[in-house]
Length: 413
Length: 165
Image (cartoon, rainbow over all chains, first blue to last red; front, top):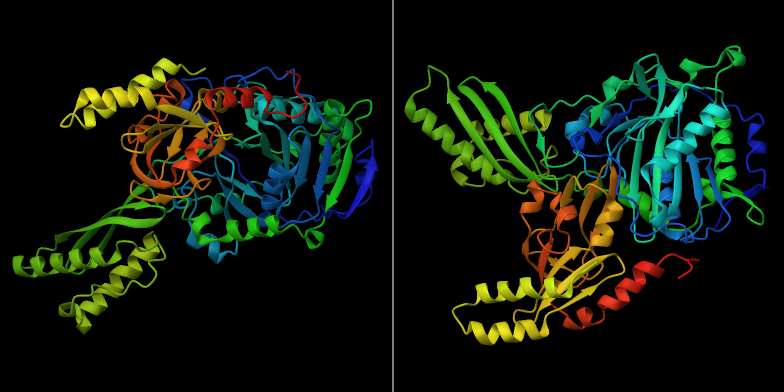
């Protein structure tokens, strides 16, 4: 492994207390949750299939990323999940520049408006874990706890982080709710400060989560607005929860001194060490420098996360309905999509009063031909869409109408 | 926990049903005699019907228990060609994602459509009604190389490093 250097043995994060200045330019974020779907059932997993007492863990390792590139950090996290020894507890911590991260089985158009995010140059990334959509920025620190699959429980990582916040940062109202979210209790209210998700592979599993340290929560609404109210997805929808930041609940003992990234990292690292380090098992801490990482799999992972096939192509089947008004009537489009390709599309024309029946028939036939020509195209991009192939429609009027409808679809999808 | 008896009964009847025009008695005999279930280290099972060379694929009870309540299952398209080890689908269980891999190479003949509406079938009946797909094997040798019932049980018990067994 090509990592920059070993910081310290046994006292993993002491050097991090040092004065690395963190530039908190970006402070908005958002948390959603997806667990409500099965609220009538227990959100708890069944216990692991066999007893965990038999697993003997090796010395824990902590990786701290110096990169703020969300693609790199997510690819590196996946690399750690797959390449570290099966019985090694691993903690990985990182921050990302502003981006929106959707769950493995979510619909990007249902959670956000991808077109608007592209306009703002905010990356939209499909991660490999389940769960809902979150907004990341530099006021948010991500933690990832990788353990043997048999030791995986949803509560463990959340409890560890909540303990660190209570005991090391002094926010005594911090706890874990019945859905395993890290929350802050304020009288009868409960505010999420962390969104969690999990990934399970053959021998390993991780719990990763966001931690809202400092944020105005004002800009994020913009990033997480869908423009597609009629999308019905078979995938996982997000549910919004009231959120707050750690810095909103600073204990008076801090005299207004805000919690920063390094301090949170130190708190969680120490708590991680107190759980997994022991005699002969000292924590090793690595800083991960993006420009020193040579592992091909990490960069392959970055490429895959950026590919259309992963970002959009992994969208679960969905349907959508779109409507527009043209001079000769109203058009509604009903479509189905699989892997973000259009698998069926029907236009229905409701003619305006002035249109004759004959005109309407001709237009509906044209719309049917246009719909047919769009089957197989990528949702929203509609790459190569150029109207019906039938030469009968190769006239300026029909071509113009084709372009009008296609650009409406691109804007509305 | 898998029951050999249960594993034998279902495909036998389906073989009987699908080819009742021919000679059911003879088919039933051969099916019962040769049906075998094998397993992968990724906690999937394949049950091969030698009469059709079609393997029914699913996840094991062990896998199901570790996942918790399944809320979403995505399967490959019927007709698609898959190679052993390819990721062919996804499962999500209360914010936990896991992948489905093709345990054998071949053509996907059929998928279990009921899972899309009732993903919890994977919890209730992972090794029977919650089957994922039926694959027409292109390389039967791959099937033979998968884990036997005993080997898979040993894998589950001993798959973690450092365990005492």
